[in-house]
Length: 60
Image 1 (cartoon, rainbow, N blue to C red):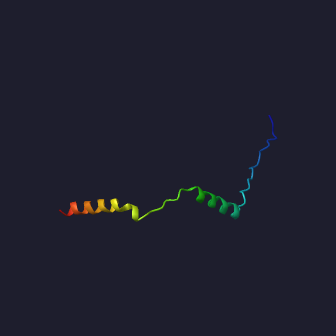
Image 2: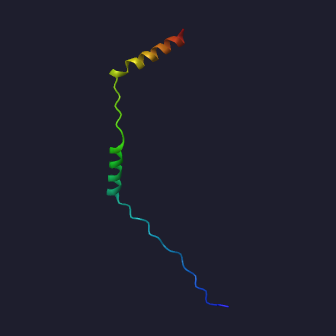
């Protein structure tokens, strides 16, 4: 029977240091990869007419 038991202690892991510059660069790169959506009031006349027609039909 062995009387000498060796227990391993917990391993301490260090959290990575937060690099603000790298975080900002990552956010900027992500922003550039998103599509840009432009809304134009001049090209949506048919949508406005459809809404107007639906409101008129509801009133009748």
